[in-house]
Image (cartoon, rainbow, N blue to C red; front, side, top):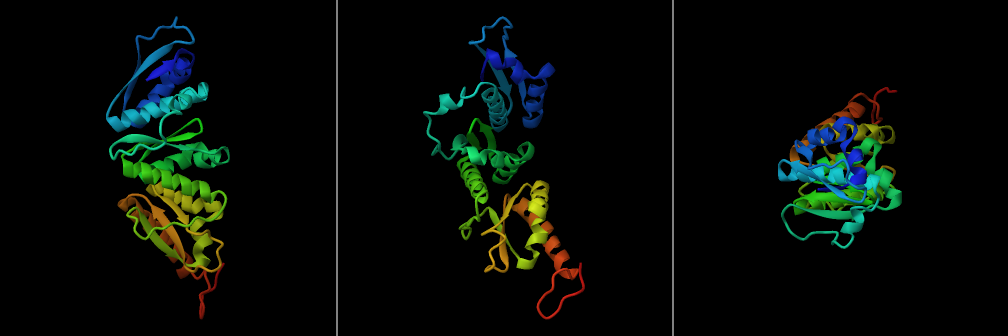
Length: 256
């Protein structure tokens, strides 16, 4: 990857700290080829990335994001003529425009939301400027784009999903009176389940729709990750019901 001389020290980090972090995250080896300290600011240095294809691409996108932060539009201007989606089935990269109002929401605290969507979709996701770069096979890229679009829509209102024929979702029926307990204050309990299992979860239609009981909680991710998330969420529902914290019609225990 070509790195502008002005960004070399930023990309390297103190004593190579940034490059070492990228190497550790993606199991790659990175170093500059024929680095010239006297290189003029408008010249380019070459950074070599060694490893498996997916790992190399993940590391490359991470470095690109750092360069774009230091020198805005360096890559996004170059890529502006490319189509946003690649039709080929194999490993490739799509891009998705992130609107200004969606950016911080899409990033999450410390990049947590981006990592969550990446894990659930199986797609490499990196934000470069105001674009999400999505690298993977076609199915992974499609899932990542769908998940991100649903995420953006959640910021402004409830989201409906046609999940009948999807293979990447588990639907858990949550009694209306349990929704608040299952999701937690500002969604903290649901976020914890996502973090623990590598899934992407949300209540379809929003938690405040009074006409849907039970409410469908959608769990997206790999089959194993969905099973783990479903089990953890069922435990929270059972805790709410069995402990008598929910007053069922015709009965109900004491409570808090």
